[in-house]
Image 1 (tube, rainbow, N blue to C red):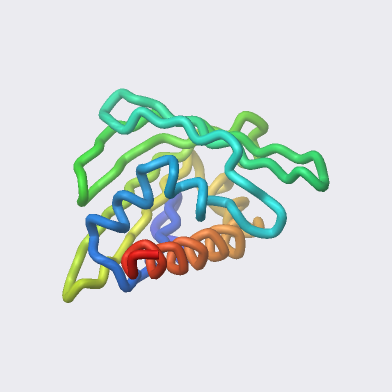
Image 2: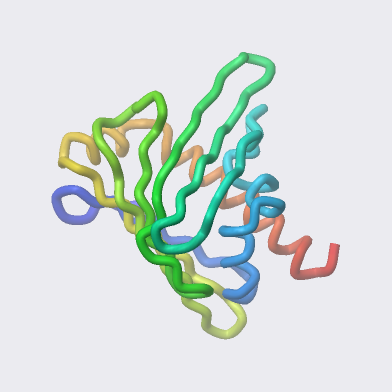
Length: 157
C-alpha cells in the first residue's frame, strides 16, 4: 500500500489463481462473504450488489461479540469482466471525509493475477487520514483470506 500523488493510495497484490477466478471472488456474494472483512471476529453479514454500470452495492460487516457494525455503499461506474471495476465508496458512519473512487484492475500473467486498486479520495487530508488508520492491516487480512480462498476454490475444495 503506497501513497501516490496528492489524493491516492495504490494497493497491489498478486494471487496464484487465474484472473477469471479472482474476478469472480471479487464480485460473487457467496465468495465475497468468505473473504471480504471476514477476520478477527468480523463477518460480511450484508452483501448486496448489482454489478453493472449504474448498479450499486452495500457491504455490511458485523462483529457479533462487540456488537459493532460497519456499512459501506457505492455505485459501479465501470464494470468490465474480468479486467476492471470502478466504483465509489462511502461509509454509513464516515471515518474519512467524503467519498472515494476505487479503480480495481485485474491482470493475468502465467496463471497468476495481479490486482491493483487505486483509491482516490476527495482531499489529501482524507487520504492521509486513511494512511494513518488501521486500513492497511485490515485490507491485508482480507486479501490474505482471499488468497486462502482462491487456493481452496482453484484446487476444487
